[in-house]
Amino acid sequence: MVSFIDDHRHDYGAEPICAVLPIAPSTYDACKARAADPDRRSQRAKRDDELREHIGRVWKANFCVYGVRKVWRQLRREGVDVARCTVERLMRRMGLAGAVRGRRFKTTVPDTSATRPADLVKRAFAATRPNELWVADLTYVPTWKGFVYVAFVIDVFARMIVGWRVSTSLRTDIALDALEQALHARPKDERLVHHSDRGVQYLSIRYTERLSDAGIESSVGTVGDSYDNALAETVIGLYKTELIHPRGPWRNADHVEFATLTWIDWFNNRRLLEPIGHVPPVEYEAAYYRIQDSPAEAAGLT
Image 1 (cartoon, helix red, strand yellow):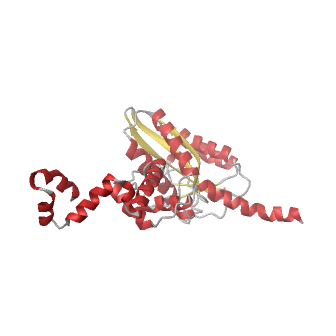
Image 2: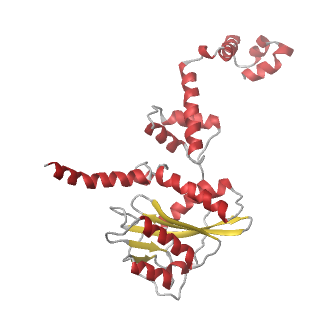
Image 3: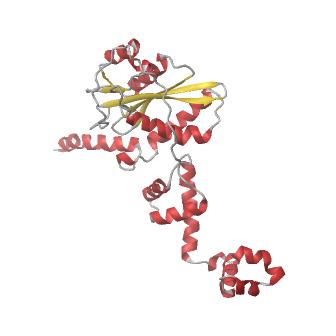
C-alpha cells in the first residue's frame, strides 16, 4: 500500500490517496520515516532482519531443501532462540520452502527364477546398534549421455549411508561395488543382516557369495509387498528430491558422482533426520558409542 502511494503521490498527493485507501496519513508518514532511518523501526522488525540472515544461511547451507521444521530445529541447535511460527512467517515472506517429493520409479527387476533368501526383516526396519541391519537398493539418474545408476547400502540404526556406487551399467558390479565399500568402511564384528528387494543384482551368485564370505545373513523382501524395502526407498527418495530433481540437468556420470559424494557427506554428517531425533546420522552413532564406552570408563576409574 505504501508503494502504491509512492507511485501516485506526485499525481494526486499522499493525503487524498490515504483518504480513499484504508490507511491514515500518519501511518504512511511513519512508514516512510522508518524506511529513511532504520533505527526508528520496531524491535520486532530489527529482530526479523537478523533472523532472515540466519534462515537464509541455514536454508542455502542445506541444499536449499529444508522446510520450516528443519530450519527451525537447526537454528535451535545453533543456539538461536526463535519460535517455529516466526520461522514459518519469515520463510513465507522470503519465498523459501522445503523440497517436496515426487513419484518414484523402479529400477531393480525382480528375478523370479533365482533362489530367494527368506525375509528376515518383515518390514520391521529397526536396529538397536550399528552394523545390525543394512538395506540396499539402487536408482537411476537421466543425463545428457544416457541413464546413470546409483546403488546405496544404508545402515538402518542411524540411516547412515555406508556404501554407494555410480555406474553407467545395471550389471551386478554396481551393487557389489557399493557392498564392498560398506564392508571396508564398517568391519563386521557381530551378527549382521543384509536386506534388499528381489532385484537380479542382489540375487546374483556373485553378490550372495560375497555376503556369505563376509559372514552376513541375506534377507530379501516378500513377493507382492510394496513395503519390502521401504527404508532404502525412503533414503533414495530423499536423494532424488533433494539433489537429483532440483539440480539437473545432469551432464554425465562424473557430474552425478561428484554431486552424490557431496550430498552423502552432507546427509551423513549434517542433515537432521526426524526418525533418529532430529540429529545427523554421525551424531546419533557417536552418542550410541559414548553410552557403550561409559561403563568401561567407569570401571577403569575404580
